[in-house]
Image 1 (cartoon, rainbow over the protein chains, first blue to last red):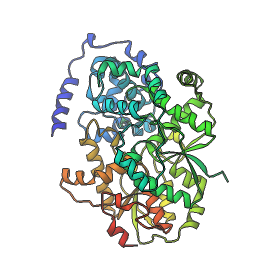
Image 2 (cartoon, rainbow over the protein chains, first blue to last red; image 1 turned 120 degrees about the vertical axis):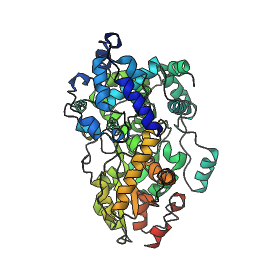
Image 3 (cartoon, each protein chain N blue to C red; image 1 turned 90 degrees about the vertical axis):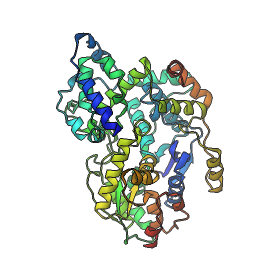
Image 4 (cartoon, each protein chain N blue to C red; image 1 turned 135 degrees about the vertical axis):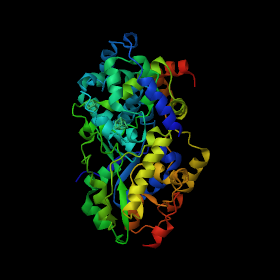
Length: 183
Length: 291
Ligand code: SF4
Ligand code: SF4
């Protein structure tokens, strides 16, 4: 299956010899300043997170332990350009099971945020962001659904304060990011 | 006895395509004497944007918390994702002064301030703790003793355990007890606490479908006649996507997936029609005929 082929390609890529120029020794400090990612250096590579990760069970290349090690080593470019960081389903099993209390899923979130800032994001997130900006809701709720609500005796859906939402997009810097990556 | 009145946080997915959850929940809560107040304004809880920009998630969540503070009401959320996000952000902002200052800096621009005066609960917390098993039992008019079902509690309603702290994340029992109170038998099965996979379906569909297939398989193996969920995302994975799973893996499951509110509603004497059973993708008429 496609997943396996892609997985093998990824494996080979990740097994490439590490060159000193691939490594950014400051990356671990950059990451550990981000809320939730402070404990990245406490990981002692026991592998519990990977063993208990539901995504890792069905993927040939998604390994949270490896993502944490790559972060410690400072393989910034490889991490931020990889599709792999987008596979965490945020089930938080790893957070509960890690003996070192490393916030694995939060570190992966930090990697995603950085990747968005420096590169791009999967298209689905562009859609979600654009829907929220336009309606306050993450999905475009069809007119028909709204009409049906009335028939079903459900109250009107609360409206969004779109002015406020747009302002928040601006001041958190999200508008700029979206402008840069294009929607 | 706490006052049973909450601000209802429906989220985006329920009005988008899972209104059976909303319809049945409103009916059941009403009959149990739980008052729900509509949000005066709404924006997404913020969860979908956490991968993109953490501050944006924090601020969207905080804005909803502020709206609840202005009404002086605790929030009841029906979606595991909304609950997990609003509850986590609420706790973090209450405990972490520096973070609160940062988020309040954003909120100031829209004339709001997080104060930390309310709490956030998931529907099953409200039912299990605030209403209480006893009172629910008193309202059961038609015990569902013919039914054998399996529950899927989902992730954000129990994990991270340290943040949620309501149920045992390794062996959650609240939903099981809520099911037993209806008279139905709740069956144990393998890997009960495993994720539905829904959060990544927009990036990679293959893995979530495999995960969901496995869960349906485990549930079928113990002979459950239905699966019970408490989150619109989980429900979508098993109900809406069940035929896709069957096609992808060339298998037949045909396991009806009910919202807990629908199961409870049946036990409280409501009809399948009232509880929007017709909106379920996997036909539940055989199940209903057992009653
Ligand atoms: S469980 Fe914790 S300590 Fe063990 S490899 Fe994963 S992050 Fe590192
Ligand atoms: S939170 Fe992400 S990395 Fe951790 S166990 Fe779940 S899917 Fe795996």
